[in-house]
Image 1 (cartoon, rainbow, N blue to C red):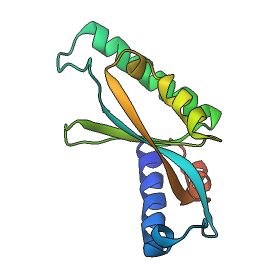
Image 2: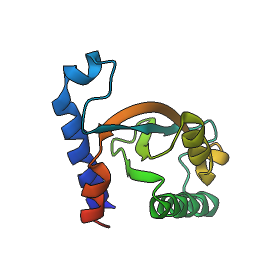
Image 3: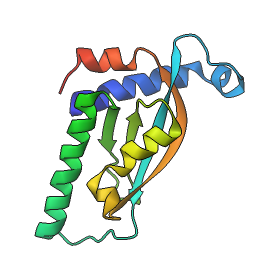
Image 4: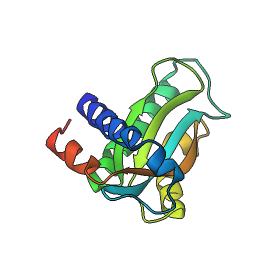
Length: 137
């Protein structure tokens, strides 16, 4: 997963290097495609206790991440390390916002209300998946 996060950061750096051209353009620049950025927040049922139920839910959450990644639906995922309400990010490869929402809602931690996902259309480098393929877990 660390290599996936590193590869994702490389992709994010590429996107940021496009700078104002993307922000001000109505057309997608060459070398960029649309993904869906999922911002993962603490949900209404989040609690700090470390219980067997929470551990089982976390294991199911991680199994879902692995399943989505194996299917090619999740390009990258990683946690935020500052223990704030923002818990992590996901980049989904989906044909529509509705499809990305269905992927996000398939997460057992989201279903349980422990996490919630905010989705945004996001332009990222076409090569992002190639970078990750060259740097598997």
